[in-house]
Image 1 (tube, rainbow, N blue to C red):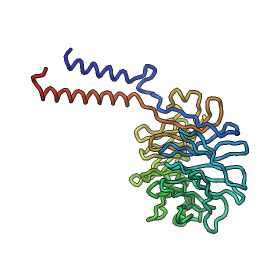
Image 2: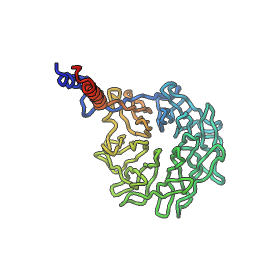
Image 3: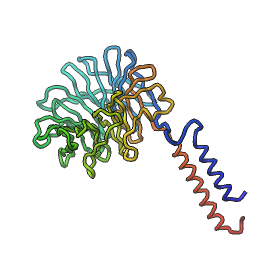
Image 4: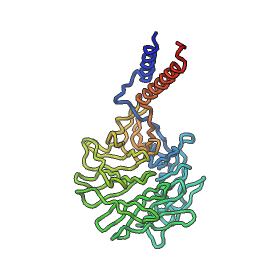
Length: 377
């Protein structure tokens, strides 16, 4: 057999071998579903709120006496994080870092408190001076910095300085809420402004920056997450209702649109360093989870599940890490409301590119060998 014929035949066979017989290139399932389970003693309910880049997932689950915050890992399963003593039996985790340190809220004898779970213990983070009402922590970065709200003010907490207010937008009315912090110390949230409630990006050097809102709406926007690059997502009132947005320093605030059959209420809940965005888009058939990318636009995650997703109905996509894993909430095949983890599975095109790449390397090496030793044929 001539080398050229042998080469291309081998490549064709290798490429075809990369396609499972039951799958096609288009419409390939993209995500594997993992049921996170629930805590013992409850009624089979759990909710996944956030995921770290290391794969920790947090949220809350029913227990015999109420609901408790949980920390889940692939190696350890679901761990009960407990609650502060003296209050109603409720705690919830809203954020987690790569070390598995979680933050959230727990009721106590003096009301709802912002808490940090770390190294097997729970810490009450206190409250801002003069504040009253609920205190909740919503996000923690890998430096251990925590953000949330105390009463009606956004806070930043550090182990050295404790809790400090992040201030106000120009013309605001003393209301703000911090929802996310990245490892650069940038904070996203929303606050009262002269025009209405607006999303903000806070830095220690510049304070609060008003991110504005989508055109044609009623002067409302709310940030819900930010990436390692300082890109912010959330939702804003626009011409056709409430729409998810992506804000970057280069482009400002842009609408991400709606899924088909939308009814004008969609929210972006999470964004990762790759620019992938997840959230919910309400339609006439109910809430649908979406994945948005600049290349594909908005896709319904229920259409992107592999065979492990049979019988699942996902409603909310709440967070996405830099590996593309997504924390979601929906109904399991037995009808139980459950938190779940979606993990990307390789597409056939990935294998094809790898096979073609290997063939290309082989072909180049073969040509170099023939040129180096022309007599060896």
